[in-house]
Length: 285
Image 1: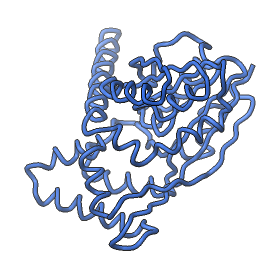
Image 2: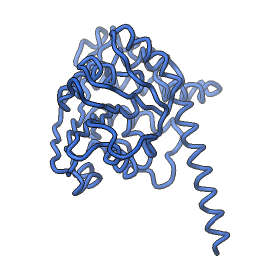
Image 3: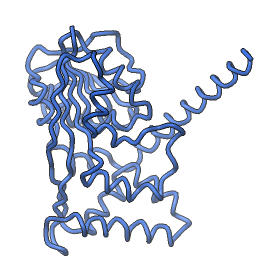
Image 4: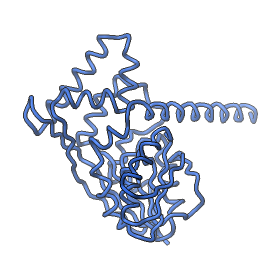
């Protein structure tokens, strides 16, 4: 029995390593910095303001991408570490930080097993990042672990009810199935679920629903942005390279999503509102 348990544990560990490697490879595809600056870049200052990040604080941004939050936190005067599972994106982040005239430390790290000691940071943030790690309870545990007592944890997560849920729904039929037992990343956009993940370990938890707008010159330009720069869609498009009908269907579904979501003119500039959950927690003492 012990041998069987050891074998099962080894198989699970191998599967987890393979999953992490696949996630890293996927997010390294395309041009994430171009994607982020074209879509979600305006949300960095929102999270910095919500967490009251200022000079003298030590900040960790988890699943930082190319520094959407991290660079803004450094601009506010904080000492900032940007951690991400995909270090291939760090060079673009370093260039952006230099252009902003700030210093950010870039460290490869998994949101489910952060490479930092307990209570190292005054503020821990994640914007549309940690929500994509498969084991959500591990992520919550790690965010709390590395945050000091009475420190702040801030997150921005898509909700399932908003266009983010609709968008990931359209990709799902074309993407590989999630690992067994994995919860939807959109659960991080559910207030009750977030409260359960953090539990009694936070002294306060403020959760608000907000909206931001993604813009493009036209529906086809918006499609091209995703096909060329957004890692998950680049990966899906690559997997459909030998299936012209599948590629055509994906493009059709994407443009239909744009059509039903667009606040702009049907053939003109695209304006798509995405709802998100702004989560600000204060860790208990």
